[in-house]
Length: 333
Image (cartoon, rainbow, N blue to C red; front, side, top):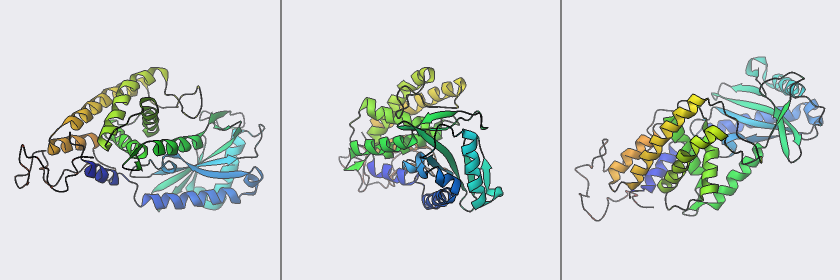
């Protein structure tokens, strides 16, 4: 069994956001400052917080959008969604100008062309222990609100990453990134990255995997996803932050059918890679599984003692049947 831990570490580095992380942080700070500086929003107790995959540290290269959750802590039940969006639009237009601000179904988008990314600021009002945001279907003063709790998802991600560790470090977050990359490589559109992140959350919290390598954890999660996708396609995916609720998705019946087929192939390939005794053949399978990042770079590297086709380099110190692997192979966890 070739788990190739050092090469998984390299693969993870190739899907990290990189410079995008600093740009996302700056953009989020500017939008949050603009919201807090607006007097009408200040009177409603605005308290922006970063949410989304970037906030949960599960973003993969590259970060194209950042989500700001504009909590209006002092808003009452009389505040209508259209009015809240109006106030956000006024505040952000005043700071960034009309050309950079775009009103969307339930948020305001601010473009940062210099970073090639955007920030979506969504208003939220209190609802018991949760929050409500505008529905997508309407945005006038007759529109309704929909319950959500994105800050709880960030907490759950942190808790799970602390609970499951590998070599003293959280393993949940790295596995989420690997699963998101697999989804990107195998699924053209829907379901999206968040959907697969939630599936990964349930894979850890329902399946309770205890593996000894990145490879083992990735296979365990993909096995779970392979089994669960047909179920959630019919019944919906449980929202871990709201009891009795399911995750919203734009995926159609055809999208789910395609995703089930492709993830079955991906899970089978992952099992084959994990069971492979030869480093080079295993690496080639992991490479096929993880595909390329958004910059076109192959995510999983082929070891230096292997040829691109998965055969062993003739110059390698290890020959078939040898007891030891080449120095630095990182073969075992």
